[in-house]
Length: 258
Image (cartoon, rainbow, N blue to C red; front, top):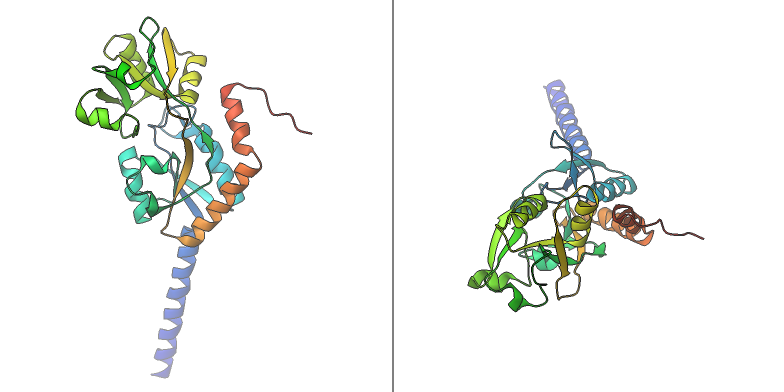
């Protein structure tokens, strides 16, 4: 009987140790959301649909390295990102802003990574968009799942027509065809597209509000992991790694170092 009890205790210990090891192994992986709705150069996917390059990959790969974590990329539609962060199924999603999510207090927020100037893209022969009344009655191409705080009220009232698509490229094609009057974009995406083979005769007008900063939202599901990620992101901001990557995608010269 004693022998059986000892064997039972050993078995329980082995199971417990295996469980601890499995949890430790699982939490050595950083589960990062990068949706293909993030336009290049934020995210660049290869022909098989795998994330292959882009600013998001640069930042998150570096974050995993400084945090001593393996990385797993999750391709989710924008509408599911918040629920996955809340449930702990995902650890981090970047290029968000507290004003663009439903309940910002449910996440930890990184320091600001950089500011993203929002643009109204129009056909070059169309009048410039300088103020909200200039959009009255117009059909505006937007990205599915994204929030546009400055325009949400007029979208809801129907004064301006929101027309979603999956990509900037699709929206610009529809703009060129006359199916849209205006397309919403951000400076980095639009100029990267135009500087890398994008066609079309367009004008670009900055939105009237100050460029919003973008952040990484981090799940509160695992406070210890969140602390490691916040520390790593602060390091990447402080050592100007993110700024150097931005300059590269903008085609700007590298920073001069002393």
